[in-house]
Picture 1 (tube, rainbow, N blue to C red):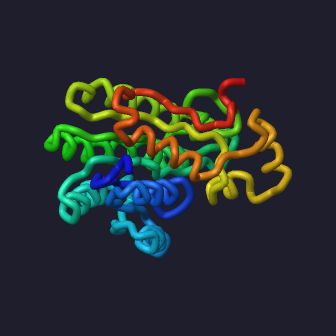
Picture 2: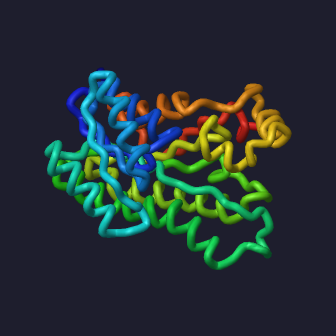
Length: 251
């Protein structure tokens, strides 16, 4: 097992990619700290891990609030003694495709979750990993973090910021034994995808057709990429962006 006896923290672990990754971590015998705002869904993720023979706890936290983020890391260390891996996956999508109609409140909402949340999470995760002399962090960006998409300008900006923040942090802590990378999915079968398409078959078909591989991805396919970046299999990999996009960006 590639993560045996490791302690892994997952933000946005209540559904979708976060839940799939939390379960995948546990299957590799990591102890998992599931973090999210929704208690029922978070406890369901923990239950699924425990039913599969894994060990996990849920910490209710909002990654846009510094006190919550500090608490989530303290709780991980308090229960399991250390923090080896962090998957900063909590995120949100844009609601209005028109840049000139978007509001200051919408900007703040998107940037607070997608950028500030990643920064705050790394701030406290790295502080703990520095005490240990090692660690691996994976941040969730998007295919829209490396290319532009006209319908989601603020979301695109936020995901570009995650890539830049990751590169800078990776360089700053490379010699400290901490690796920091990005996973960048295209469209994935999640509740967020349903929300982005409004559940409309025409919208889903259009987005599916944008992927050269001929379909959209699954949460498990992203989780597998995160597992690699989190493990010693990626011991010489830091500051990189791993596309999990069915060829979307290559075209």
